[in-house]
Length: 469
Image (cartoon, rainbow, N blue to C red; front, side, top):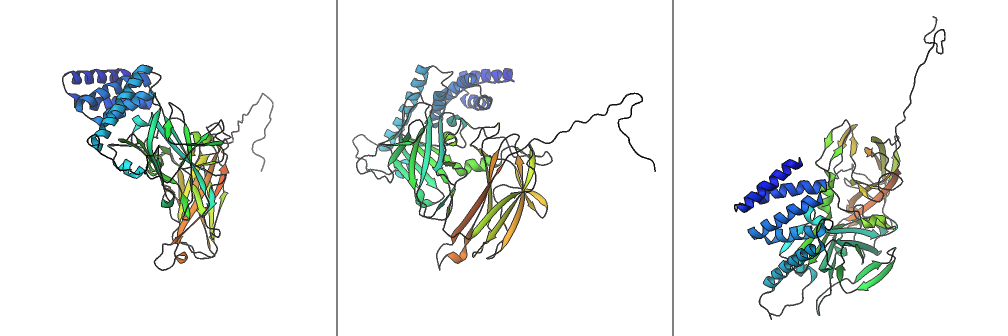
């Protein structure tokens, strides 16, 4: 396999020598992806250097910046002075794009918001589609809350963890967080100028336990170090609150976008094993590094989100396990949903899982295990979009489903029901969103194994098989 890859690299070198750069680039992109998947950093660095040269020859500035940042992250195989030179080159390219956008020197520039700066970015990098940039930059979001449920009008802290593997400190020009509740959207200008609007102060969590807060003027990412920033938000709508997107602006030209909704959809179709041995979905997403928020106590991960409830929701959800959760098997769970004085029109039924520790697997992370809904006795693969029957006031419904239990890994199963209440809105007003959830901790157990052997000796009859009629 490696010999074939070596031949492909030699062929790409010959294409570059004969001015067939496009063909060389196509070959090298495939080889680089193989090296990334296998974790072979040393040969990956050699290939990415060639791709960076191809980008220069083809005058593709965006690809030049992308490959430069990926090389900066390969600190174990690249010399420090070489990484710094590549980083400075990428910064110079971004600065040249900024000057072209600003126009002639001396032209006065009006103060802009974070959204205006991001809209004018020359290059946008979707982090859910770029394996190269995910090795250099990381972003994680969580809610600083002891419970995954708050009441409407209550303030909750949002923690954003950012990391850069560049060899030098990297200044962030702007940060924007978009939530499922538009009222919680936050825009941050790092070191804003006079007259530049911003709606959020910057507070960084510091100390060994991240229990101290420090106000800062800007966001500066030190090399290979997580920085955690805290932003308070106050939800204005009832329902499920999650961060849908995080946008990070480097300089005025490079915009990094983490679309968490898209990443969740990609994780939903990853490789899984269903009942009967049928393989579902494509290849598994490869995570880069570990989530620092998963190791912090009192933090609800963004993948799970929090529920914003009114004081009188009118919905109750209860979970009960119907069969023993065996390792690498499926356990049957029943969700009992009941209403008080509200009616639900085809409420959505959402299932999520996260490791709860206590097993051999790493705790604190989200899981994407196979779930099958039982509809009229037949299993149907749960893909994230499932509707329960409509419920009238003071009624209930039971829904059974099968959950796959990974070997020797404890996990928390969360079931959430949400729907709009038409009776909760006046004429011309939007219907009120009703939501409730329940959680249960599952601890898979190994299957029972019994070894049995029969032994006998001449003229000895330890067992009597059969009998006289």
